[in-house]
Length: 191
Image 1 (spheres, rainbow, N blue to C red):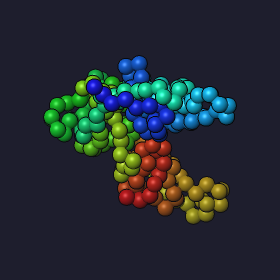
Image 2 (cartoon, rainbow, N blue to C red):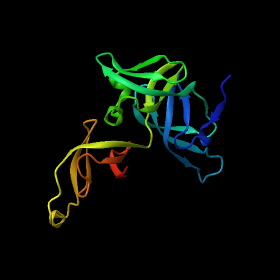
Image 3 (cartoon, rainbow, N blue to C red):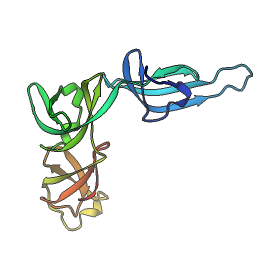
């Protein structure tokens, strides 16, 4: 039997199961009443890992959740076609396919052969977990013009090899490798 977790112990990034669906906690807020006999309540902001819906719900502190049958499987990105995005499971060497609704904006940061983690729920792939940073080549950016910083903008647009466009400092040139934060899509430094 799966272990049970009380609502009061659920913290940010914890996984739990509610109504036969896996969730990740995005934020938790515990409110303790001042009156005697009042119940401690836990307000959870959570994301459904099957639908990606985000919502808040309040629970009693002693409400219990099951731990989901959720595992992270190392996989490498192969390609995307009309059927979805295909990944090679690095342990079983099976091909795992995720539809566009499950992949989100992950393709903005994936190159062929990139190693990532695939979320498996009850043996089925339901999403991907990207590394915190990825290193990508700058495919196109305007050259910096002397005196450009006078407008107050010290960044310029750069198109990366995956096709995503980000803002980079003026000194970044075409062909350079940059480090990008996958959570926000922001420039994090030279690679």
